[in-house]
Image 1 (cartoon, rainbow, N blue to C red):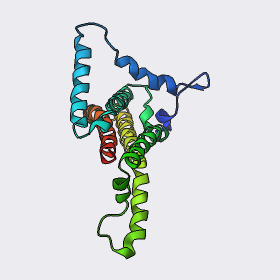
Image 2: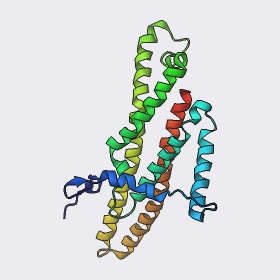
Image 3: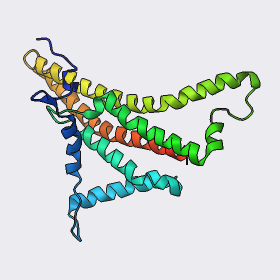
Image 4: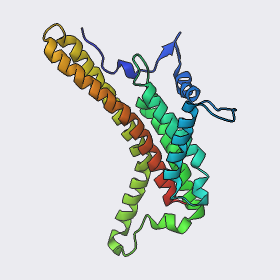
Length: 226
């Protein structure tokens, strides 16, 4: 039986209508706001992790950069939760879609660049031409630096898409091999099953790391422009 490896990455529909918006909104249920004076353990752990991450990520920023704290913390929580939910069986991972990742990367990158040209115009323009550049290299370096600037959001989106997609494909392939080997060689199937469990644990780590890397790079772009 031929099986399409990329069928799990297709946009899910219900009655012919895409339900991606509902899937994207679902992670917000995992982070409820508490009105109690003393929070339960789950909310306390969530708040501690958010405070720890924000403190580590935002210490390098000045007052203008720290105004992005809420947006960056919301971003890392959203990407991390969607990546983790995508590891559940028969689920859909929105971050495997390049279009969605570009939709997150381009506005954030454009916002940081806009702030750089608004508040640090000379420094922002100086990035296009390093000091001491020979005259005959000026046109080439300006073109190269301009291209590298516009590649930044593409790199953000492609990195996240490629890492999440590759992990899901590996799990799919090893899982299929385990099922196929159960009747042929149970001992080999046991080995591949152990590899599958280890890979799944690794993918949980990758899901969180990729959320942190995406947000950290946006934070570094912000730091360079504020």
